[in-house]
Amino acid sequence: MEQQQKFYPVGIQTFSEIIGKNYLYIDKTEYVYRMTHSASKYMFLSRPRRFGKSLLASTLHCYFEGRKELFKGLAIEKLEAEWNMHPVLHFDMSTAKHMDKERLDSELERKLLEYEEIYGRGKGDVEVNQRLQGVIQRAFQQTGKQVVVLIDEYDAPLLDVMHEDKNLPILRNVMRNFYSPLKACDPYLRYVFLTGITKFSQLSIFSELNNIKNISMDEPYAAICGITEEEIKEQMSYDLGLLAEKMQITRDEVLAKLKENYDGYHFTWPSPDIYNPFSLFNAFNDGKFNSYWFGSGTPTYLIEMLNKFGVLPSEIGGIEAVAAEFDAPTERMTNITPLLYQSGYITIKGYDSVFDIYTLDIPNKEVRIGLMRNLIPSYITNDTLTTTTMVVDLARALSRGDMDAALRLLQKFLSTIPYCDNTDYEGHYQQVFFIIFNLLGYYVDVEVRTPRGRVDMVMRSWTTLYVVELKLDKSADAAMQQIDLKNYPERFALCGLSVVKVGINFDTKRHTLADWKIEPVK
Image (cartoon, rainbow, N blue to C red):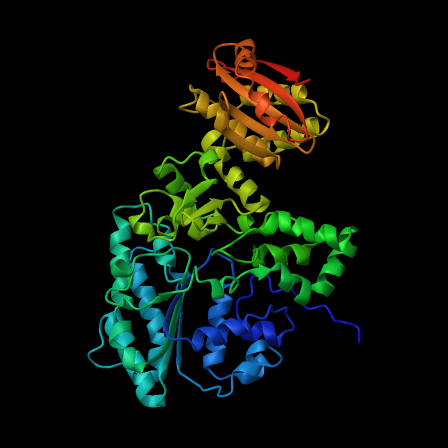
């Protein structure tokens, strides 16, 4: 029988709609059964935005309502025998973003009113915590069934004020007050599940609710959100064929491009490679490999926090840390690593079991280029369109192996953009180069160790490895002499690529390249 193509659920997070309207659903119901039949009835899952957390909450909602017909043919159909119905209180906190205290209080009251219209409101229920407790108790009393509480994106009201010392404590207290009845209502509760991006400490947000099981880094739940390569091959095989035909490339080439752009996430170790589902479905839907995750909106809090902690573009990836340092409460963080990890801008890339230390880096091409584009205004210019056009011209020059033409383009570009503050030091231009050549999709690293010192920058194209030394108000000759004196290229002799030395001198008065020298290593 000919297989029928399903629609891709781009932006759709309601389980019943996906199942009822012939959308593609990657079966995660085995995890639903595992979660709901475990020793803990309080669970928390942290995953980056647009990774399927809301769909998971919606799936749990339908499961606890006993809607067995929706799960026909899915893994849980064979696992679950009872299908008990429970009253479900489902709170989506994504509607409570960008609010002050008064508006947040009003939004929480509105959410409670929806369930008070079903279960009633007690005369003494005034504050939102009293009203939540009252709704839970009455739902239990009226149905005779324990209540399920689902709180999706619990941290949404706090993300945009995370960098604000004044507003964060105020809104955090509002949310702490709202969640406070969950511990007292334990006898009336069957299951409590919270999702979020960041991990706030139990003390500051959940008051006395100290029995939440955080499954975010538990190996059995490594692939609970996102899509694995195995799931693509098994559940999207037909779709792979369609995409390959549309793009006029082979299935293997399609998989390689999908992997390069959207794969590479790991939320524990060991873990299968996890693809970003939002970007993956968009790519299948459009037949293009665009930057969908970043296109859906880079949170302003990220850029604010990068500035607050003074993190350079070249310092975002390549980090080693123990779990307690990156899977940590964000309001107590002393560096930006927990926020970068929990938001999905860096992910686990390796683990040293001897020293219990993880390697963290940027997941894939989409995230790397998206990050660099969002950093352009801070380091180069607010005119991102002009920068993007310049990068395309650079790419054309370097695809011909013409570094001289590329540097002439860069010289002209830097001389025409407005002067930025704090550019009179070598490190600024190093970061400018780092951003621009990352936008080209090249491998770039700074301060690379060699036997005789550190190279300012190493860049690698498909055919050539460039060893780059930067100078400020000196000369390109001085930069090249340092490369030769310390024999930097020796470190890369066995890389299998042509090695080219590049010495560059910047003029701080003109704020652009003054001169440069380019010499192939023979």
